[in-house]
Structures are given as structure tokens and as C-alpha cells.
Image (tube, rainbow, N blue to C red; front, top):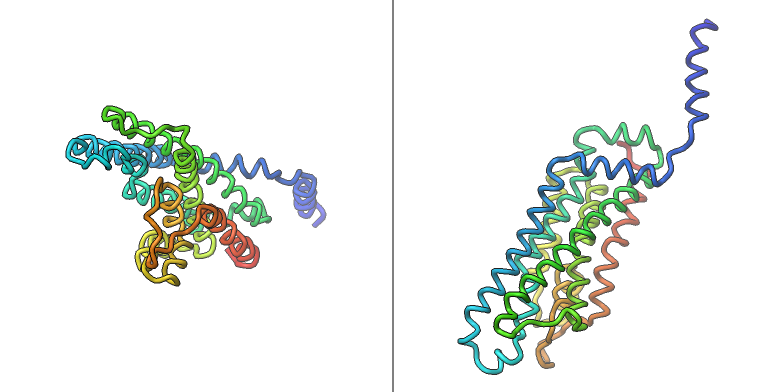
Length: 284
């Protein structure tokens, strides 16, 4: 009996003596998990090329049609900033970022790897925060490359018509910053929804509905509906990349720039809190 218990006691003592995992170790582990997937660099690269390509096509269309625009449109060229950040390209980026953010956690639940993770690191909240740090870092860099690339390519094309906007313009800087931050915001939304829902298909449907379909249900000609639409990440981003606003009128209820920044910042924070509370109490 003594001989059989000795190895067990020794193993228990070894585990007790082992140092606890530091948060930097968790971040490193999540970084390895992310880049061990072959789809990660391909997805990031294709998303970048798609958005930059969409900006190039939009700028090329205005370049070709520029001689047919009226003198005021040629002089003001209010389309220039819109060409740099085309809606179809950035809506796609939002969906891709949110989907990959969600997959970083729901894939572990689906494969059962989450049991190994929680056995090695019982502090589940720290694991979620480590995933959030890695997700935010990767998508911030990607978002900056996408925003800078789409702006540079589109304005290089429009410069041939003397219709480009300068990168030093305050509105241009605001639009680039908002577009760069849109990707990590959506990726974190997907990540935290994945923690809350834990089911891949349900999470993907929720992400698509929340980011793409729900904003289209609001009307801009009613104040209460417009105010609700201003709370959507995509709507807030659209306000921040707009270089001009229509003249004031009774049926126009635009959000302010400050409100739009707050909306982008609030979404990840408000979803992080229930995600941390849920992951600590729920069984894996």
C-alpha cells in the first residue's frame, strides 16, 4: 500500500510545486493556437486583398466617370473618401473578423480541446482575456493594413483626376483610424459571443444577424429608429468615415462623431463582462 501511494503523493507534490501559468504564458499559448491553423494567414490575406481591391474598383469607377460629373462634383469630389472605404468591402471584413473571432473559441468547445485548456489553466477568465488580447492584436494590425492600403490605393487612382484627399486631412485620419479599429471590434464581438453561445452555427448566425441584418431593419426617418441604428457598430463606423453630412432637415437624425466612437468602444466592453461571468460558472 505504501509503495502504491508514494508515486501519487510525489505527483501531487510536483503539481503543487510547479509555478502557476503567467498571463504572458497564456497569451503565448493562444498565439500559437491561432497561427497553427493554416487558414489564419490565408483568411487574413484574402480579406485584406478583397477590401483593398474593392476600394480600387470604386476609385476606378469614379476615375472613369469623372468627366461626366457636374462641375460642383468635380470640384468637391465628395466621393473620394467613400471610395477609400467601400461599404461592401468593409461589411465583408466585419463578417470575416467576427467569424474568426468566434471560431477561436467555439472550435475548442466543438473539438473538446476546451477541457484540456481548463484542466491546465483553471482560471477560465484569464484564458478568455488571453484570447481577447491575441485576437485584438492580430486584427488591429490587419485592420491598419487594410485601412491604410485601401486609402492609399484609392487616392493614388483618383490623383490622376486631381480628386484625391490628403492623408493629413483630419477627416481622412479619423476615417483611417475608425476603419482600422472596426476589424478588432468585430473580432472581439465574435469572440465574446462565442464564449456566451459556445455553438458554432448559432454563433455565426447571431454574428451575421447582429452586424449585417439588424442595422438594415431600422429606419432613418424616425428619430427613435435612427437612435437605435446609431448603436450598431457598422452604422457608427459609417458615420466616422463620412467626410460630409447632408444639410440639417427635420427628417435627418445623424449621430455625432463622439457618440460613434463611444459605440465602437462600448461593444467589446459590454460583451466582455457577461462573457467573463458566464465562463466562470458554466461547465465545460
